[in-house]
Length: 247
Image 1 (tube, rainbow, N blue to C red):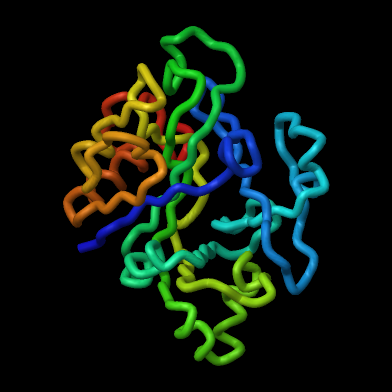
Image 2 (cartoon, one colour):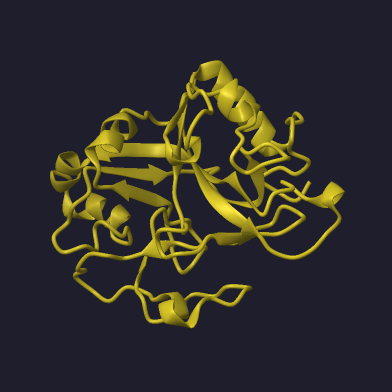
C-alpha cells in the first residue's frame, strides 16, 4: 500500500519576495525559487520562463532553482526533485516505488470573482500543486554510485547542476506524475493560515502554528483518500476544484 509525503516548494514571500498566483477558478502558476548557489552551466532566469502575469522587473535576470522539475513545464523533460537538507532527505529517501511525493505552495489570489467562486476567500492560501508517483528515491551517495547512463535521468535537476553537487536525496517521478491543472486547497476556505482537514485529519500534522512550512506524512489509508481527492473521485471539504484535471 502506498504512503506519501507532502513538502513545501515554490516562490514565497522570502524567496524571491512574492508568491505565485492562484486564480479564482483554481488554476495557478508554478514559480520556482531563485538559484542561490554556483552552477556548472547556465540555468534559466525568471525572464527566460513564460508566465501569465507580470513579474517584478528586479528578478527578471535572476537564475531560477527549478526544483521540483515537472516534465513539460518550464523546459523540463523529466520529473525530478532534489534536496540538500538532511532533515528532509532521510524521510524522502525512504519513499518506495509507487509511493507519492506531493508538492504544495503558498499562493496569492489574482483576479476578481464573487467570493462563492473562490478556492479560498483570503488573499493567500496553501495548496497542493503537483505530485510525483515515485519511480525511485536515492540518497546523494547512491546517485554518485550509479552508472553514468543512469545518472543521466537526473541531469536536468537543479542540484545536479550545482557546482558542487549537493543533493542529499534525489527523487524521480514516474507515470502519473505531474503539475496539477488546478490546485487542491490545504487552507480552509475562510483563511489562508487555517489548515483544512487534509492537514488536520489526514496527515500527521496538527495544523497549529506555521503549518504551511512543515512536511506532512500520510499513511496508507490517508494516501488512498488524498489521491482520490486529487483525482476528483471523491469530494473534499473546502475544495470545489480538484488538481489533476479540469473537472
